Image (cartoon, rainbow, N blue to C red; front, side):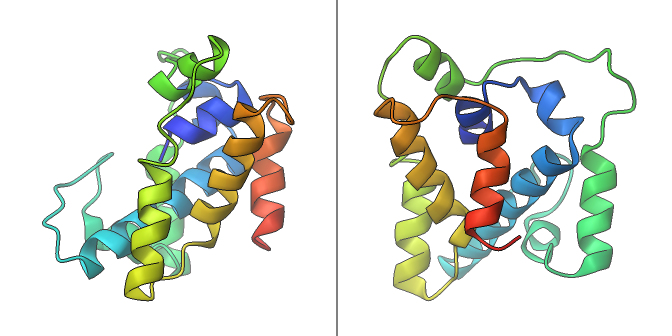
Length: 149
């Protein structure tokens, strides 16, 4: 849920979580992955402090708000790490987008689970990998806009 957001935006983890749109894309990606995982019958442990069922229910406003509060950094002094996918983009290497979010997208299609944010993320990441688009923060808004969020 964080790898492609960092890779497409050029931002680090703290910068993304400090941003409302950064948290929004993260929550939507996690929710889609959780729903697909549940549809596949996977036992998914808690991640980022919440149970898979909570992530999957992020379409409910009270659940979304709770997840948003949980992800919002308490201070701006935390570690601003860079995920492996962001490092790959910075070094001009191919990423694992098709094996991560592309997998969620493909499995969602097979199971009838909508994954519009994952689809838009995969598209934008391919554009970044192909150097049609630069990694910049505006790409987060572009993805959300492509999905109508």
